[in-house]
Image (cartoon, rainbow, N blue to C red; front, side, top):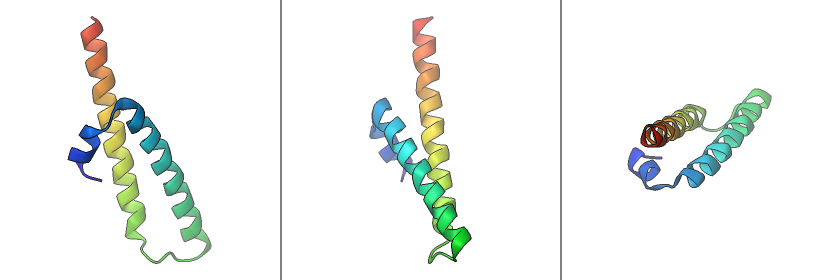
Length: 69
């Protein structure tokens, strides 16, 4: 997922996507622990997507907090 795609999402969509990515990461980690998965670099990509989503959510929360002050 690219940053431009993340910027287009609404805050609710970001939260939903974040929870989806977290569940995907959990499933990938479990599958990798049981037996080697086909593409282990996918775990890294999902982790980075989670970080990008968290960063954007934090930016939006900070922006809304500064607007209220």
